[in-house]
Length: 331
Image (cartoon, rainbow, N blue to C red; front, side):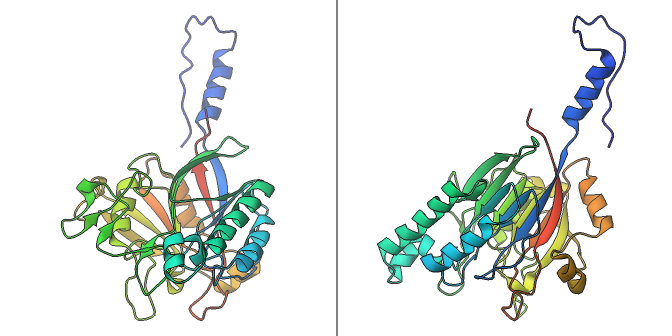
């Protein structure tokens, strides 16, 4: 949409002409298109990382969460050609989750060693940030600014790190939690209702790119309500390898409260030409989907991306996703 500005003649003490002032106003209003490279569940695989403005890794960098595996994964991630490289933990990063790790016989010294490795890489690698659960804001050199909510937590399935019982809602406010569930949300774990551009979690929301080998929906119902309430531009995740793909969702008016019917209308899943993606080194939206998504006048769509690199055979057969977002510039 082309920005409009009135050039009506008025007495103006400013030395800037009306025409120039209009041009400056339009430039300030124009969003910045930012390229995001999204991946998840690399499980120690050192895959090729195409250039981007921002790299998002949605967890499971490692297979076993050991300090040795972590060093190798961060050494690879730090070489990515991206201004920002943001990552979260997944359920395989067991040494990150202190309570779980100690309960399984892990040592406190190993847990602390893993955290030290992260801190050392953050200090030595420009733009590399480990995101703990909560909300974070970043501004790129171009002035483009975005706020991202991050969380490593997934519904409990077997024994693994960063998990919670399905009957506990950590992502919403009390009024958005159904009666059958218990609200355990904190200031950091709740997804804010406004101001969120990107949600990055390790696992998916319910019914969106979350089908397992036995056709079970492994996504989180509470996360689904939080997404409908917050309406980010992008929700990226992994965890469910068979769910790899991208899908846009639309909202109706019922989604505002985040209660009852979540008001989400899934659009058709994006077609992924795997051979073409392998040649390019990434998957991307079709031109039509990209035009529709980037052309929104109001935020009525969210792009959902399951970026699990590991495929259904536990081989790194899925390519990262390269997507563009139109972001406001910092004033």
